[in-house]
Amino acid sequence: MIKNVLDGKDEYCFEIGDNVEVLKTLPDNSIDCIITSPPYWKQRIYEDYDGELENIIGSEDTPEQYVENLMKVIRELKRVLKDEGTFWLNIGDKFINKCLMGMPWRVALQMQQEGWILRSDIIWDQMKGTQSCRDRMRDIYEHVFQFVKKPKYYFDADAIRIIPEKDAYEKDGHIISATGVSGKKYFKQIEISKVLSEEEKANALNALNETLEEMSKGEVVDFRMTIRGEQRTYHGESQKLSGRAKELNEKGYFIIKMRKKGFLPSDIWRIVPEDTWRKDAHCAVFPEELLKNPILSTCPIGGIVLDPFSGTGSTIHAAVSLKRKGIGIDLSTQYTEIAKKRLNPNQRT
Ligand SMILES: C[S@@+](CC[C@H](N)C(=O)[O-])C[C@H]1O[C@@H](n2cnc3c(N)ncnc32)[C@H](O)[C@@H]1O
Image (tube, rainbow, N blue to C red; front, side):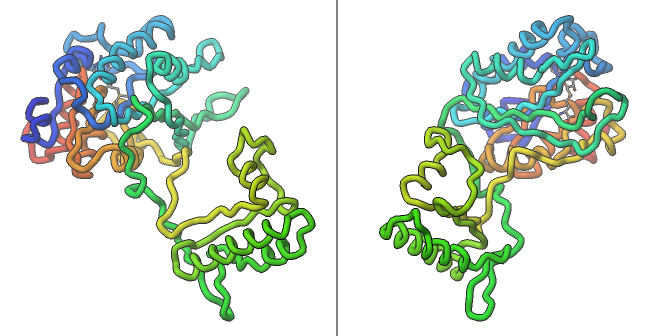
């Protein structure tokens, strides 16, 4: 029962029904995080809907109808999501008459129109793809969009940092970075520079010494320095475009440091889809690895994760394993039974 999860009495629940109708029973601002993958447009035929076939999203005649049907769900999601909450939307595309329809972006742009802030477009590299087409590249990725309601939202960066595998080390009394940078080359370049002023040289030397100090204390494991007139820069010269270009212009140098406490994952995720090895489900199942970072970073411990197209319950399973609560909604009794069994393997069917 949804109420029991909201009241903290139950860890999770699954509701069978049309998500727009079920969502109407949830209060405003009650959900910390939403993660979902709706049926893609004209992609699959789902089975066993107890006569609810007309509510199945994905079988619409036109892309516009698909976007509008999905938006009916998404408008309810916006209402139930807390102001500091995040909505992760995984959505696939479709070719019609050889033309890629851009379905993920049609939905994303409509969401922007309706006030959502698009924070990330994560490319889920599925590391395998069909070979069926001979006149274009293999399809290998899907989008996972990260949407928020407000510019300030809950995000626990420390929960998902990637800790560098290698540390800086000492050699012959000198500190060397994880990738072998000692700073010797930079000292020389600053010293002989004809474009830096004396003041800029002194500041650059100070910053370099401070970085080496941070490395010997173990706070920084690696670094790279860019000095005006020495290193090639890969960003535009325009200061409007790049903060680094501005720093280079104003100070004569900048330093990029890799800190021991780690760095955030990139927006390309290489994860093999789960349905290659789950045999009990016939729908596109989320791999649990894909759910980990969204849950850890955007749902506090004890908070509630909602999946309005919960299928076989992957999102709810991952949420509960990570000490969050979960609410799943799906039209299919069959998939919901699989979901319940995953959460409670001893349950009798
Ligand atoms: C891509 S699958 C989701 C799979 C899920 N992520 C998992 O890991 O198993 C999409 C699901 O949306 C459900 N669905 C389609 N239309 C729906 C609606 N109007 N209300 C609720 N669920 C719906 C389907 O039954 C299907 O299980």
